[in-house]
Amino acid sequence: MENYDESTKSGTKTDIFTKRTIRIHKRVKSANNAQEALQICKNELGKVDIKYIEQLTGLDYDTVIANLTNSIYKNPIAENFETEEDKKYVGWETADEYLSGNVKQKLRIARLAAEDNPDYEVNVKALEQSQPEDIPASDICVRLGATWIDKKYYEQFLIEKFDINRYYADEVRVEYSNFDGNWVVSA
Figure 1 (cartoon, helix red, strand yellow):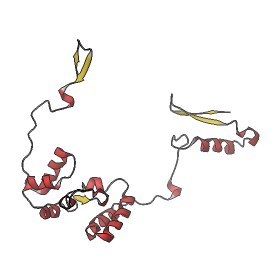
Figure 2: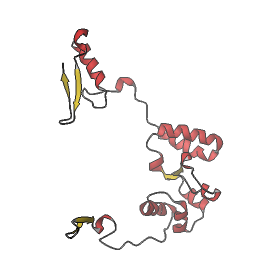
Figure 3: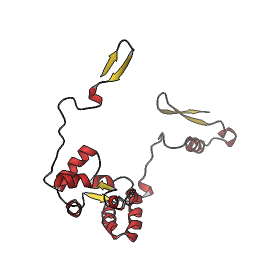
Figure 4: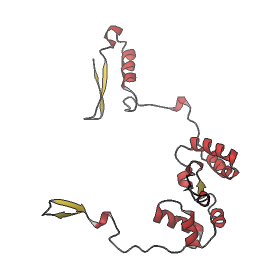
C-alpha cells in the first residue's frame, strides 16, 4: 500500500489511493435524460451541477429543472453566488440530501424563504411531508449508564435511590472509565 524508498527511509502512498488502477476512467459525455445525467453528475462531481447536466443532456435550464422536479431542491441557505447568472445554478441538492437531517429547521428556513420567493413553496410542501412524528416524553427511555448523560445526574440518582445522608453526599463520585467504557462509582 506504499512505495518505500530505502535511501530516504520514507514511504509514499501507492496509486490506489489517488487514481483508478484497474482501468482507465472514461468520462461520460452524454446522457439520455435529466435523471440519468443527475446520477452521472453525482458520480463525477459529488454534487448537483445544473450546468453539467445541461451539457450532458443538451437541454436548457428550465427543461432540466422541470425534468428533475422532486429529485432536486434548491436550498435557500446555499445561495452564495458571485454573479446574477450563477444565482440560478448555485444551491441545488438531491432530494435525499435536502429532505434528510434536521428537517424541522429546514422547514422553518424554507417557510421564511417562501415568503420572499414563491419558488420555495415546493420545498415547504416536500419538507412538510418528510417531518417525523414527535415522540411523546413517555415513550423516551434512557438506559442506565448512557455516556451522554452528565455524571452529576448519576451522582444525584445514587444519592436519592440509596437514601444517602446529605453529610456523605459529597463523597459520592461517578466517573467514566475510558479503559473499559463503563461508569465507576466510588464513595
